[in-house]
Image 1 (cartoon, rainbow, N blue to C red):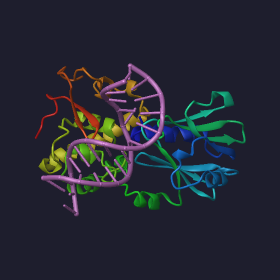
Image 2 (cartoon, rainbow, N blue to C red; image 1 turned 120 degrees about the vertical axis):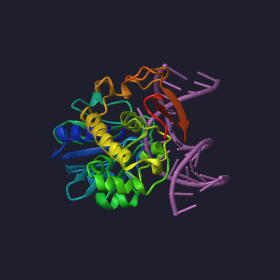
Image 3 (cartoon, rainbow, N blue to C red; image 1 turned 90 degrees about the vertical axis):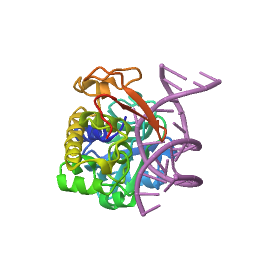
Image 4 (cartoon, chains in turn red, blue, yellow; image 1 turned 180 degrees about the horizontal axis):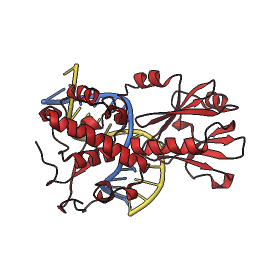
Length: 264
DNA sequence: TTCCATGTTCCGCA
DNA sequence: TTGCGGAACATGGA
């Protein structure tokens, strides 16, 4: 489920277990996951070095490898990280595995191969290359910047929030939660929002990302009045018990409460 | 067997 | 120019 809050969880996870450990070896079991770097080159840059620092930008997690540059991880729809001690614990869909000198392993797994493992010389340069907007969580902390960024756009709320070049990190699932909490209808066009609505959206975005990020994307741990624990077909609004409505656009499904989220 | 799925990218159309 | 919607990608699970 990797969107920004989940990647926050991955960042904390790596921070707690994988930092400053020399990488003895690395193995790529399916090179379709690599973008812009060969297996050989990746291995060369990892081997004998250590992960020294982490940087998250939207849904991307970048890890600085001492003296080499930045390892880029994107998790697609089904990516995950796993640090483990015994080789036989290796997860089934591991695509990149690092073996540390201390005998532990780190697996980047991706069941559907929709993520990517890549390389960057510099995080800012990387973000510019990929046309990534500012990180959604950081942007939500700055009222002026948030307003300016969004006022350039006229599209619908849902598609703008999930547009990574406008702000990076929000995907299909968390945009539903943000709009639910902000009581805004996903199809509302941005230019119809008042300054007050926009400020409400900013605060809500920050709060939802913070709260969800704290749980590292574990939906079951969220407060019961959150939408996500109830986001399934046939479910009812946790606030007013109205049946939740599902719509579809661009191949992605959106869930909202027809009563709480007024269309404007 | 068919449909659906949290990711991105590309294309054609308004 | 901008935004939208659909299809494609690869694969598994219900």
